[in-house]
Length: 211
Image (cartoon, rainbow, N blue to C red; front, side, top):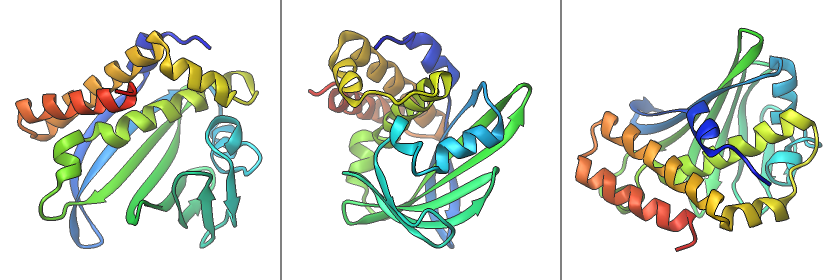
């Protein structure tokens, strides 16, 4: 497996914004990029139980509005909005906590713009955010968007063994560092103290590089 790190990093726009969610203050990690396919094809890749494992993880459950889903070894939750081929929203339940993920699609030129939001409530005293910043989830979503891009380009399944080997390679580690740095910049733009954002990005990079 080989990718152009600079090209994939540059394809994603990264942002951190504040908003209210269910009447409470929240932070939103936003990643967006365009894909050279139609909204219908991209929607199918995002929602088909047969296609999701080709680029992400095996999934089980009832993949319909109000249904429960479970990603193997990762998050599960409830599908709270499903408007093909435009908008998908789910709860993201992992490690005893609940956050929220929204995905929206819009035609853009000959392709489709995907925007992903990962929403977390702001609670008092946030050691996880202070330690890792937005890159904790942001780098993971950047890696997920690579898998989606590779699948859409070929239609084939992404080999998990190849992905694992690539992640441990110099190229994979370079990607983790560049992605983490992109989220550092987004965090500073959001208003995070620069020194704190740099320290959090260093911890995130170390985690994703297996340090």
